[in-house]
View 1 (tube, rainbow, N blue to C red):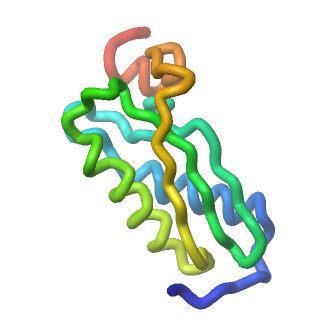
View 2 (view 1 turned 45 degrees about the vertical axis):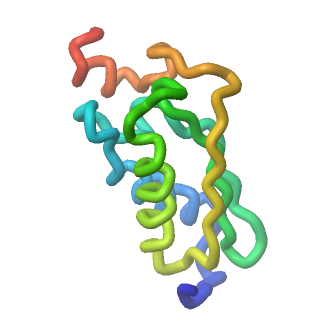
Length: 110
């Protein structure tokens, strides 16, 4: 468990979590999972516990066992984080509309 530092605001911590998530890529797509739109929700709870609700591009995604663990590991690398929980959902189903404009541009959709 990392040392908890309460001197950082929740917004600053959330930005650090997002930056950590942006280091994780779907192995088959050259865009990070945040910009792909796979992250539905990020909640920061007391004592810097983080909950992430996410999806995959499809329920049969070959990286289904790898991506959530990679996201959890990346977030645990943020010094201020105490604990991390990543939950996978397929409701609502993923669509390409969930991608950021940067991701759409990178993949040639814009």
